Image (cartoon, rainbow, N blue to C red; front, side, top):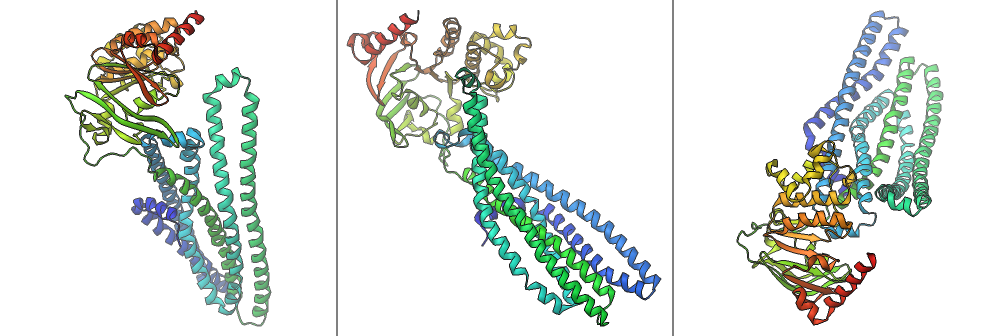
Length: 579
């Protein structure tokens, strides 16, 4: 029974059925040429025995034509099959990349080896599939060669051939035993390679922290341990594969020696010609090639099965953000955002507890509270990075689940503490706010974000490369580019998630100017630890342990001497001590 993963692989292959038909035709020509060559040896030797020069010349010419024909067919056959393998592998990468972009955040949070493990599945596993697909040509061609050669052997001496075939079950039993071990160790090896990729990515992403805390030896030891385990799995696989070769060859050697002995007896008794003897021997030797290739293909298929199973675990994942088949556009004349009795669980951990909140259009609402109080979780619901475990989030009376996801996110802009810039130019990073818009407004957005002047001071201005994750810019510069990106997007709803908390005082002043421009005329949800930055908010909502405990203006909440007043006094004392 063919595993479902292999069936899926075959469906991916059959997308290119025209190329596969050509591969099949060329494979038939190769098989026919090889078999006819072996058969021609009988005529060649018998012509030489009978001193029939015309027959010898004719056979030599035929063998030459067969060699040319086989060479051309082999080139087309292997070239097309390898190219199909590349196409299928690239399709897998596209599907994985598309899936990665549509999976919800809970999937990433729960994936054990993180983004490094996902990279491993896209690169390492797909390479295994690609190499394995090349063997599908062998699985089509070599059985034809094998059957043709066996038929010729039966024609030459059916009794001898029948006695040889009895040995085949030994080879098949050997393959079966070997395949079980290969599946087991291949899965272990690929999982360990996933961990290695994750460690490499962590090492590159966290190089500053690693060097700062002298963790170089720790990361090296982790890498060595993972590499050692990976090599152990690969050693076991190679041991199984390479051990099968000598055993198979030993069995074939015994068979060939027996045949040579048998044939010398038959030829000596003039029951067969030297032409039959040589043709039979060459056919038997030629038979070892398809047997070996089928054996190798069988091994590769086991690795393809494991790799494809891991790839399809991602591709077939149901962790995508669900969308309504009758989704509606984001409403133009909306009045308010409504969080209605919203609860949210991360696994078994409840982070929001029956939260109800209404935010009017154009209102600036600040969310404050200690770390882990649920501030970021609440705003994450607005862009559907997560969906509520219970309750609903609505724009007026329209649930977010019923709004087209792309249109929803088009109407919400995010500026966060952890600024992400693409490894591209400053211009492209600002334009990424909405590539559907003309870039004419780029400079205006940068000016409003208080970024235009520093951009012009760079060597290439707006064409300046920002480096990996914006590493060539300072923290304040990166933040101002992200504000310019949000201004260019020009969404009516704005989320500011700790947008200035990681900046020094000078950078914060510059960034705050850009934020003030960005917030004008928009509905804003602001998260900030520095309570001094949100005193002008229309309303302050205080969360504790996933619940709203207070809300009101800064002065009203201070007068209540409650949770907000306590937080405010604490942050003020911290600010004083820092000075």
